[in-house]
Length: 64
Image (tube, rainbow, N blue to C red; front, side, top):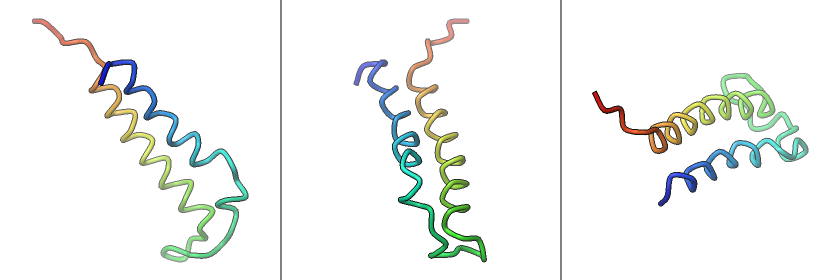
């Protein structure tokens, strides 16, 4: 996979949170938190991990 192709992974969080009616509900709850809140929080963590993966896959080798 070319380096530019890795950037397509960054579309996943965008699409997953693009349509609020999909996740604008209260069930299923997780640890007492409605689905709406824990779904968005989960995407904060998942997005950070995806950004890390894309960064590591696309960075230039550091030649010391």
